[in-house]
Structures are given as C-alpha cells and as structure tokens.
Length: 333
Image (cartoon, rainbow, N blue to C red; front, side, top):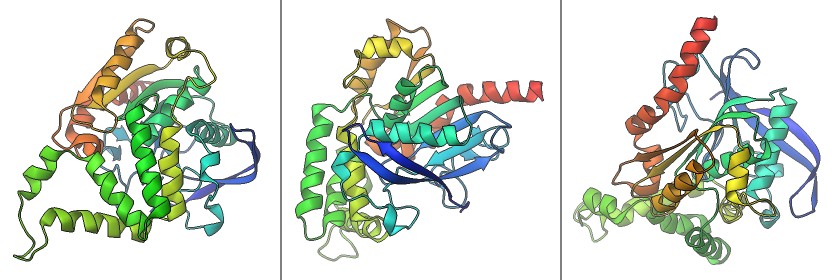
C-alpha cells in the first residue's frame, strides 16, 4: 500500500454552524507527481478508502499503469472521508456523526486540494457515496472541474435512500452485533434477488442445515466487523441521507447550468438503492440546460454493487473520457 499522507485542517466550520477545532485529512496519491499531469480525484464509497489501486486497491481494474485511468498520464488523488478509520488512528474517529454532511466532506476535500495547490481537476469520479460527494464538489466550485462522473448515485437522497439509512442507523445503535447485523441488511440492498438466487440456488453448505446464502451474508458481516469501526459505519451511513445539492441553494437546473464540467451520469439498470429511473430523470433535466451532459448505463444482474463488479462495461464507458486526455498529453509532451 502506498503511504498515507496527512493534511491538518484547523477551525473548520461545519454546515450546521458548529466548528471542529481540528480535522486530519488523510489521502494517497498515485501516478504522476502533483503539478506535472492532469489530476483525477477518486472518491470512495461507504466502506471504501483511499487505497484505490495497487495490490489491494479496490478499483485496481480501472486505475493503474496502462489501465483506463492510466497512472502513466494522470495524477490520481484519493482522500479518506474524515472518520472512516482507514488511518488506524483512534483520535480521528468521530462520535458526533450527525454533525457532518456530504457538503462538509466536499468542502474538506477542496480544502485538501487547495493545500496541495491544485485549483482545477480533470475529473472527479466516485461510486455511491463517493459519487454524491463528487456532485457536491462540482457545485462548490463549478468552474474547477472538467469532468464530473458520478456512478450508481444521485444528486439527492430520495425517500427510499433516507428510509434505508434509518433502518441501518437503528441497527447500528440497537443491535448487540451492530456492524455485522447492519451489513446483512446492506448487502441485500447492494445486490438483487436475481443475483442472489442465481448464485446460490437454495444450496446448503456441505450438506449441513445452513444455506450458502446465510453463510455468505454472515461472512460479509464478520469481515466488515474485523476491518471497520462502528463510529465509521454510523458516520458513512448518516452522510447518505444528507445528500442534496439544492439544500439552502438554488434549484437543481440552476445549479446544473452553473457547472461547467462535462457531466457523465452512470447508472446501473438493476440498482435497487440509487434507482436508475432517478438518474434517467436527472439526465433528461440536464439536457434542458447543458449540451455536455451524458447518460450511461451498466447492464448487470448484480444491482448497486455492479460498479465494483462490471469493470469491463465501466471501462468501456470511461475510455473515451480518459483516452482523449491521454492523447492530448502525449501530443503536448
């Protein structure tokens, strides 16, 4: 794993009016040195982190040498949402998780980029929670992003998302085994009945009484409990319901008109969490105020998690965006 780096932020004012005296912002960089190549900011999802490529990188199929987001040509930066625990620093855990919003996270990320003397970025990309943060980043600095690429997400939390966040929060605050139990529910949001049924086919484990689907879910809960902290889960889950780029601002179309970035909305046709109908409607609205707004759809049986599974389809969608810039880099070099 590439070494974590840290930026110290002091006296940070949250959206709710409270102030955090100190926020450590941990991040990793990959590829070209800062200041020598176009910058791609990759935002992680709920249980993700800044380790986006390499041996244990969660998006190594897309990011790295000779990959779609080619580290020969780009500077890749990935921040950890403060409180996600990836730095393994107990002092960085956040107990007052309800104080934070996605807008706060986006502002924190821009503070980090400013510290690194990065004023514009070629692309900000992220799936699920990370894509929601990307929307906020583009609204906060509408002239600073060339390409906005939100995947399997939305610019607002729907009632369906808010309802499921509540269920997760209740489990996390009331269960005797909160992380594992919350993960059981979450995994069924991230997949589809068709995916589950096709994979397990009502089979049992070694002729025992336990079904393979039960074993699979229990193992997911066990693995997450061993690598994720309860306070981090509470915070990341809570952030999802704070997703709304229009809160205390102009309406969506006015905000979208101001965003100069080319917007690539990428949905999953079977996503039961951030449903594709919402993304299609978003794109339809965007077309009324922007010529550079595009809609792409991943076709998958796997549902929301397809952005972490269907790498070939995602690569085909992203290739024209990043290959064009690579060619420009090559010519200018």
